[in-house]
Length: 363
Image (cartoon, rainbow, N blue to C red; front, top):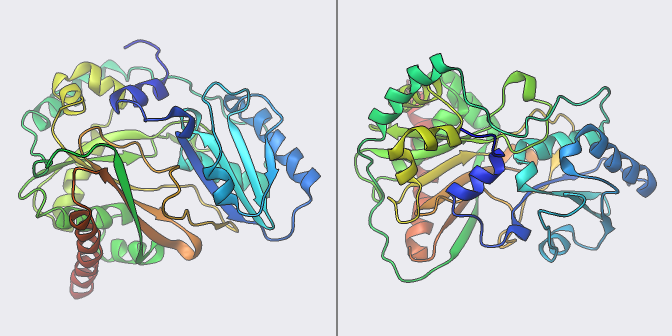
């Protein structure tokens, strides 16, 4: 594999977003006190010194009446001198960074550094994805060739309409609840939420399903580094029980390799994510580093910015943490699918979560 930047791979496998000037990651927080604009500007510019992948300063900072309306009206070209933008309305601060140099993990890091400036240099940015060690490749590639040999897909797309639509619904699920259930069943919050999603998929994909999930893609040495590190991990799910989903995810994770490497080395994977390939349902729980003291802003519906990269032939479902640790259930789908059907998928996920939670309490 060549030294092509990871972001370019992500854009190419997804067919590229419709508008690269809107392909951004978002992070917002309610500041503990009214900020000093001059001090805030200095803190924002300091981010560029610690994370040069964001470009050269100064960081554009606008004082506005509504951070979301202002951000939605903005343009964010990938060739801009500075790839970080900031909006301030009273105590609400919203950061926007181009997705080619950032991800949700990065945005929480940036907010944390603005609110509690760190010390020392940032870890070196890994601008490209290098091939894993030959031993790991030899161990992992047979697994992926076998797992992706015959991929079950979603029910046929009705066809017709083009473009995408988005649904955002408060789920009533909190990070604390997911963690409590995970402890009870000796798994992880991600797995118990993925189990609920697997159950909700039933009418769209009876039996097995291959669900691409997004990992934060970071090693410990990268945890304080800003960049596009998220990785795509296809997981083949059978019986939607916590135990079965845990084993399937653990096996896939044990064989994780960078997604561009997987596309280059396994022809089935390349076909899976090519335009015209099988329809899949992507799942993501937005993962962010600990942000003690950060009160995040909840992204409103219909913003037209943010969210995960959408598989070219299917739908993306993700859980976005907001104020108080509550998750917003977000679904982006091709308009050729019926809105009522997608609304039903969201409702089934919430109902399935309650079933998973009840099963854990009875165990």
